[in-house]
Image 1 (cartoon, rainbow, N blue to C red):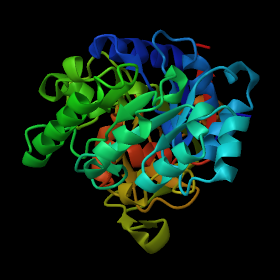
Image 2: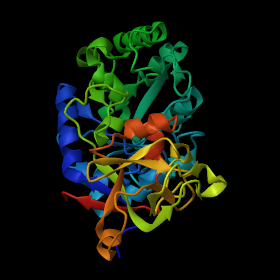
Image 3: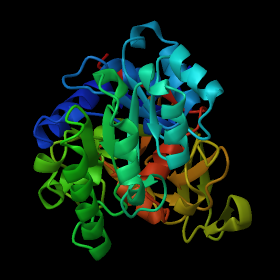
Image 4: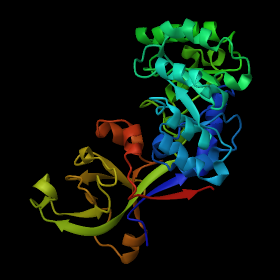
Length: 378
């Protein structure tokens, strides 16, 4: 049956975006972020597509559950999976899971790091250490830097040392900000203190926005790896920023399930939030906020049909929404084969996000399992 609402995902574009970002980073090691179901694109398909790309260091996920789901795929049994936000409290149970599934851990609390070393887990588990340079969310405080070095000073074997040392930028899109400059200086200090002792470690701090501002963040000279997220999926990290040779990987489209003719003055949908100013035909699309389409788009956003913009009319409900109809009458072929684009090549997801008073990240990660995801370019 034709999909009620479909996300078409172009894996060739994903590969091309990876290549573009790899070149933009000056060929740094790559840690693509595929957390939250690869930003709604399908973590397993994205992981399988990227696993053999050049200079792939690891695939970044947020939780143990996300990593285990990927590791169960045999084709990913040798791909490094780096778990960013699920290491605390560190104990034997967590260690057993990380060993069983061969996962790499991010340690971001001083107490957990000490426990990790005391239990000799650094002998068998690959790890990165996150430092807090000003974002004040996750990360070990720099006041523990000397103790960190003392704790590792007797560790000589390469596999017992941290594979990565990094921080996370709070305002990568604005390197000129005072607090951003403060973060940069702290990272430079971290690098000067730790790089001589741990030359094997990959130092990293750059997300998508920092890649766009790589000169200001000194990415070429200060880092060994980068962590592209939203840009990997073809979306600039900020509205109206240059695309940097990336293209949207996903287009979201819905079919029409019914046409109505409204007479002047007639209302439409819940609350009659739209009332016809003249006789007009409307199209009811088979999608709504139950699929991840924001209610805030009602009466203000648009969709695309064959290059023509059509206004969304009335409230977006759970399963349905109304738009201006491109036709007055329709055949069965129209209902079966014609699609209305909610975002993609012809309608930027940034435009929709701004109208919904949010960001593309929230829209993509909010797309539900009711959407049929189809993949091309495998």
